[in-house]
Image (cartoon, rainbow, N blue to C red; front, side):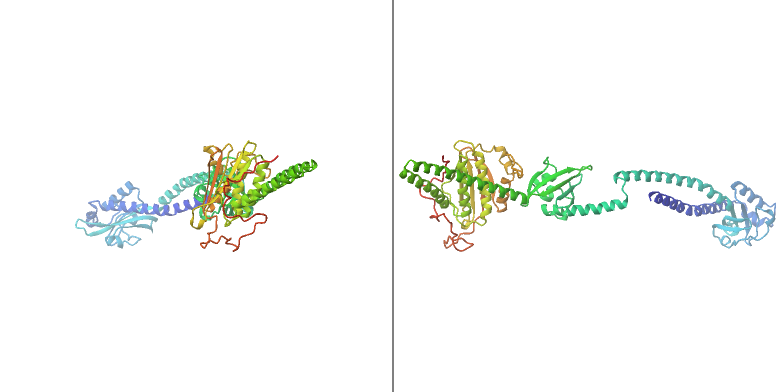
Length: 558
């Protein structure tokens, strides 16, 4: 196809050149004849010879002058004629004295003309000019002819050279077409146009049909392709094509992953509340292709599994503690120490009831209260203590108790992990409403006396995928604190970490809109039901922490 195009263009260019070239040669020959006629007419003696010579003659002065000029210029003929159109000179002397074969009217009228015409000597390029005397009067005309054969010979002589140039151009074009063809074959892996079209259709079907997000970037780091799943996962739109990841997604870990600023494989990130696993593969042109997998549901299942494990641990701890109490009680009864057995049983039941009552007095929401009771049992099993800070009071007006339970559970679990295996390990939980209008804000603080977090890592701990713990069996760590911060920011709040008074870590989460507005009439009933929700097994409390309470402390029992 390329050779056909090159050949066609060369032939067309050659034809377009030859067509005006022939006309140009004709014009040049007729203008040359005109110039010779002008030079002949400029001879100063010619008008006098024509008017005073007595008549045309084969050996007359006019014939001799005309022949001298003809031989000098190489013209086919030079005819000098009078005002009657009678020849006074001619290349064939026998024609002198005859009337010219073509119309002399324009020249005798004082005009100069040049053209291709037929005459007694055949086809020729002609030029005719008027012959004027000293007063400017037209006394005749001069007609000069150049044989057309010479013009045609010039044309035919130029054609081979032109064709040679055209052939050279065609050869260069064919070589360029061959090189281009080989380069295209290499770039397209020897695929035909129909194969490329089919592959493109298949690629579009695959990209928009798979359930993984695909983002392609060019050599300059700009987004050039996004499939449907990537648009859904990253909330991208068609107008984001051509932008860099930072321009399209803003600052954050996801944009840094797509831009290749975070090395590694199967990297975790959180985007728009979704947990994603990203991989980035460079391409030969300097760009890259990034794939994104949605692990949100898997992470939720994993967290539910972690919650189930936590519940099992709490039940196991309670079972272990219950078995120890039964052994002690059985031993006292076997020793006939009935009164001691009754006192021990009363004390044990009272301690646990006091624990539940104290938690209920500080935390009015049943879900969070139950969570803290369970965590206190787990802490005791691990040899640590969980206590509620003095002054803690959380009313039963939470907008979304499960979300706050997720935040609190994550922070308490991290704190227990930090103090596990440490003698005298303590975790303190503080919950309080903020001084917002109608008391709608909640500040949550969890501190421990563990090793703490170095200052240079206090922002890194909130990064997706960052963790110092071994990953669980169902997946990776490093998402809990990232989700805590995302949850806080989604509610307009903040999450930060610092150093506790005991030298450990202290996490503080502020949620400005975590509570329903308080009824200005003082009614403390739950806004969603209109009545206070019952707490089976837990007293309602008085609304204030028990007098003189220094916080809950549950220590491990033998």
